[in-house]
Length: 112
Image 1 (cartoon, rainbow, N blue to C red):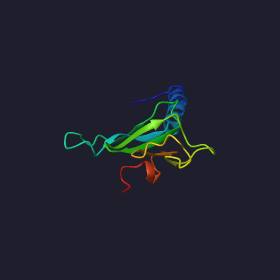
Image 2 (image 1 turned 45 degrees about the vertical axis):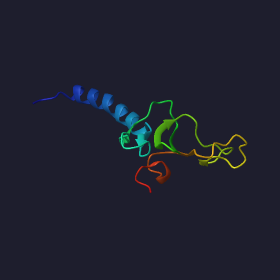
Image 3 (image 1 turned 180 degrees about the vertical axis):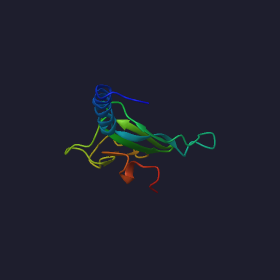
C-alpha cells in the first residue's frame, strides 16, 4: 500500500488534535455499587464524562455507593467530602466526595 506524502500529512493533522482532545476529557467511575438488596447489580464502569463535567463524585447512602461525573466540584469554600459539619440542613445518612479524577481513591470503587 502506497500513501502519498500529502495524504499522510493530512491524516496526521487530523488525528493529533483528536487524540489530544480525547486525552483531556475527564474520566470517572459511573454507576451504583452495593446496597439496596440482592436485586441491585454492581454497575460501576470507568467511562468518559461530558465536556461540561469538571470532576468526579461519589455518594454513599443506605442504597450503597453511587459514582458519577459532576459539574459541582470542590472549591476553596467547600469540602472534598461531606456533609459539611456547619451545614444546618445535613442529611445524616448521606455522605459525598468530589475528586479531580477517577484516580483519586475517594472516587474509586477499588478503595475500601
